[in-house]
Image 1 (spheres, rainbow, N blue to C red):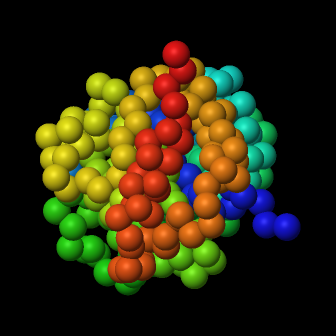
Image 2: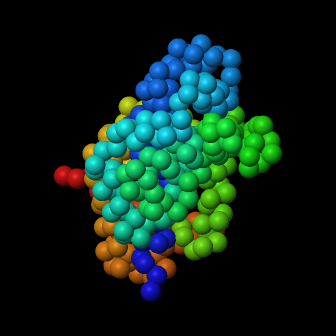
Length: 283
């Protein structure tokens, strides 16, 4: 029997969303290379700069283990940990779309026992070369053989809207139809614009994504559910499994695939009311 929740895909940003800080800045500050980072910041694209910072750490005899130990110190709210585990246990398909890099994200997730909760992590490729130096590559160079993706919202390295379009196409083929997108920053707005009616976008309060959504509501089709901090987000993630009761009480055919043009008024209103109630704010 297919799990009722398997049709819901929850996509997370990573920095300042799953973790409360920026993983790149964390490593730069904790390992004492902030001065050279600040000096070079105006001269290089971000990922090239981070790759250069890893070279700097290597020249200072800092090992990949030193970097890993530093990443394991990144604080992660206990509620976020339990919320992610709960959403995964409910059958949600959890994924990450981030402009960090594979080694940083995987090191942190493994440390907190969350790696197995995510079916896909889309981020900048990174690897340790034969000299033991961490190398950080560009996402779009790697995936699209192009230096520009043509988006005016996202940084040159990664267009989250393009990533979401590709993901939705593959997910639709698997019969999953509802997206929940959780984020905080400007590039997350590009992803949010790709969400459909019946999807949910979860912007973090007092961060750029929330302001962009509220100033451009005509560009957003999804329902909006704000969150403030790790405790709040974790609580809302634990409530996702309330969907199961909603699913079982709705008539078959209420959930019309997002790409179906023959939606009836009743199916749209039923799906909207379902989505609005999906993540109730705790009273």
